[in-house]
Amino acid sequence: MRIHVLPTKAFKTFAISLYAGVPLDESTVTSTALVPFVLRRGTATYPETTQFRERLEELYGAGFGFDIYKRGDYQIVQFRMDTINDSFVQSKESLLGESFAFLGEVLTRPLLEDGSFRASYVATERETVRKKLESIVNDKIRYAAERCIEEMCRKEPYRLHPLGQRADLDGITPESLYESYNSWLNGAILDLYVVGDTTPEEVEKLVIRHFGRAHTETAAYSSDFTLVTVAEVRTVEEKLDVNQGKLNMGLRTSITYKDDRYASALMYNGILGGYPHSKLFVNVREKESLAYYASSRYDGHKGIGTIQSGIETQNYGKAVDIIRKQLDELKAGNISDLELSQTKAMIRNLLSEIQDSAFEMISFDFNRQLSGKDRSAQELLTQVDGTGAEDVKAAAGTFELDTIYFLTGKEE
Image 1 (cartoon, one colour):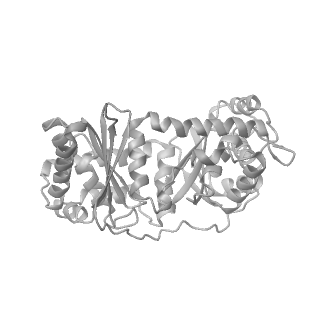
Image 2: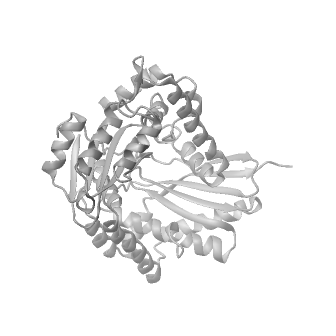
Image 3: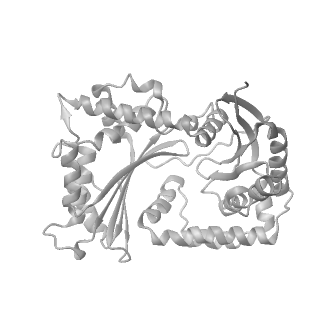
């Protein structure tokens, strides 16, 4: 377990984050996703969910939660706790220590019955995950975004949803899940973060006491990157019961988070479709009234850009043409000073706000572990401020359209 302490007196709370990352893999993705749902139901000391929640209340209403997502070709489970700093309450015990005891118990001492997870908890949480996966198709914007990535990365682990696959759920038993939990815990890359008024020495002692793991070398995330070359643009059309067409596009780029050109790629995405002043929003939505929404995203850990838009199905051809025109405009370097300055201002605001949130500070620093690139928010801000139109044009030259995905309505 790697330990990262960001000491600060800026907050009245301690923020604790534990990241556990494993490679995205079809054979383990669903069971890995299910594990934290079962872990949050009960532990050896707090076997009932009500006892589990009551313990958090005893810790002056400490917060506990988790997220499951993917970064590059890794599936990441993140556990979060926030608890009030002892100096603001009258507590006999160290609340930071008690929070570590709680988190350590959740992770390493789950409730077991007959040597495996409690069957009723596994059955209930299987349905929780099933409903979460089923809800994606009800949110057509999200569904189209997921399907575009699935089609674009159909031969890569990145196609997998971090919550897994519905078809796998029924085959997961309490016994098989407990086996999966042990494999996951022993094989995961573990990073523990604490933000607050503490020291690395104090945190290391708490980790050894409550996790039984010293600050030892752990496996590092692989930042190896292989660019998938685009031979020709692939078009996929899917018909569902929708009133409004969903036009999504996937692009590939050689620029990733660890690249020195990362700031230029951020600027590219911002000018293309990241903000309300961007080319997609202004030209596709405002001027041509072709889209209900039009935006873009950039995943620097995977080297992928995506475009999302909602259109009338009869406007498909026109919308594709005008979106492609925006991509060509950026490749040609047709970028105004106003677009540059507005995008820099938006990115500056986002980077400046990181210091206002302990969990944002943690999230930004975790990018360093994932990518192997040591770059502070201030350094990135300086690089963004120094990015000119030529830099954005050069970045645009690396983004190649790979997949066009269109979700359209069924014919009458």
